Length: 130
Image 1 (cartoon, rainbow, N blue to C red):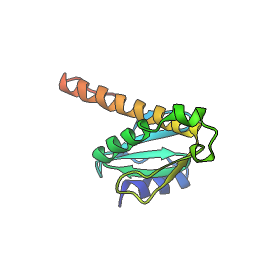
Image 2: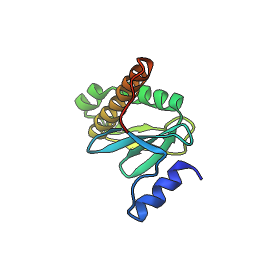
Image 3: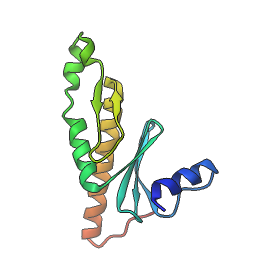
Image 4: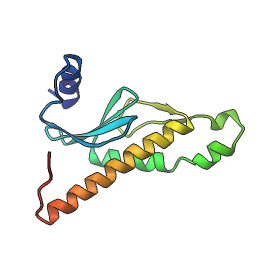
């Protein structure tokens, strides 16, 4: 059973997150989990759960980083009020405001840094706390 369904079921019944899930990074707007069973990162943002491979996660993070938030903030055109982003190999579509893009950037960047930190610690032979 894919991790996303295990998590959704456990969340519905009010139990702890499945043992295959490890929280990578959390903000007040979302969480990124790592699923050991499927080797995927699970993006939880605005009550949606999007499973992504490591490559797709990196590509989506770059997509979010390339959004010109300065242009969105300064423009009075209605076309610049929202940004539509679709993660790679996903049917999900995010329609985001300027503030939501900033929150998503914070979440994705924090998760990337935590993954890099964990990789460095493993290279040094250190163990990470669960």
